[in-house]
Image 1 (tube, rainbow, N blue to C red):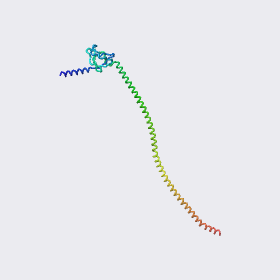
Image 2 (cartoon, rainbow, N blue to C red):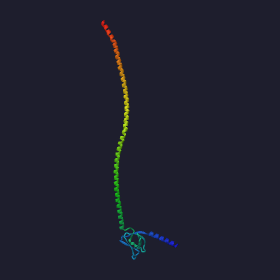
Image 3 (spheres, helix red, strand yellow):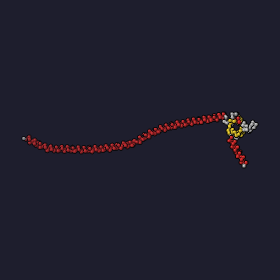
Image 4 (tube, helix red, strand yellow):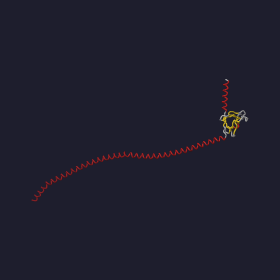
Length: 222
């Protein structure tokens, strides 16, 4: 039972210690000493350059020192006065410069992409204009082909109209022929009648003339 309580207390203490941890940075000093204890009497574990990121584990008894852990897991004590909550100006400037360089590089990439997209857009416009020109030519050719295709139909229509006119003319010609035939028969009849009249007149004259001569002779004998 005592062992279980001890384990619980250790876990609680570890949790509280983890909750108390915070991140701080070595201030703008050239280097500070990471020592094994809370005074200059303890040996130096490492020289920490300015801007080194440290995790604060606990404050010392006097508050002059804090126990810290480096990013590679080395723990020791450093003077509190050399720690700040923000990265030093030099590191912030370096990060800002890196960020600026990244932004400039991104801007250059965007400019290059913009130029590429603009070039592709101009090329697409040229292709569109060429396609429109080709379409207009095709439309004109299609219209011409429609006109050519419509010509046989028009010719057929014209041919039908001509045939109808030919039929009407043929009928008119038949009527003219019939009228001519009737006129020819009438002329023949008239000439026959004239000939018969002439013949009849001749016969009458032939009969009358001898009589007239005899009568004239008789009168002359008187």
